[in-house]
Length: 360
Image (tube, rainbow, N blue to C red; front, side, top):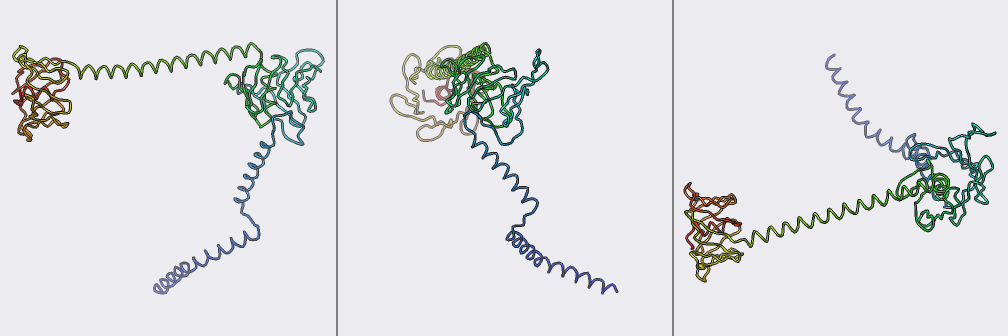
């Protein structure tokens, strides 16, 4: 019985293993047939719907022109925000702006303030019947607060008395780079310009934003100039330091008395007489002839053979053993005792050549 059970189990495993490729092939055929018949999965339908909505939005955006809005066939009201706070809404069907603010008195007391647009003339009229300005397809805006404004549809800028005071796009309004408000949906930038520049701000606010921008620009300019000066001073200081260190005269002392000097041009003077020269390329000249070399790795050569080494920490080595040290303060040590001092030292390798390797 156990043997039969084992056999059946093995048969089932084989059956499923053999059926998998067939099922996969059958599934592939079903998918091809479904696609040929135009039948889509839920995921494909959702993707198509998302793409349709995106295409619809892009088509709507492309259809918007910087002109007087005309009544839309349908569409929900679009929120209008001052900074981040909603202050009203725009109805693209009724062509009406309704503010959250209400009338305080009269027969309209308690009702919301609203401006309605005449699409043929561009004239705005309040619910009270008061003229609230006008906008034209040439970009001219008659503002109740700022007088005549000019909207440039090419650059989307707003000018007052010939000076650009702000800009707009399909949603946002700016005054001197400050984002003062926005629509939650895409509309004509001419409408955005009228709503914020033409109807909501005063000359005093424009002046304040202008002064704030001028101040910010001036401070930015001063910071940039200060940073440039600091960079120049650092570069000058670095150059001066490099020049000073390379041109510094090094006075050589032994046993407390000066016995020589290493001049800025590399001349080595001992006892008042020039005994040789340590050139910038590392060559060591004695009595007019090149007798050795200081290599970039600190190795000291004499007559073509390495005779010693000056390491980066100032340690002096000869034949593999440390024989002395040139400290950063110019103190010269040999065998653990100070034997001299190089005042104004800039290159310990040159000092080591004078004190330790018998060239001078």
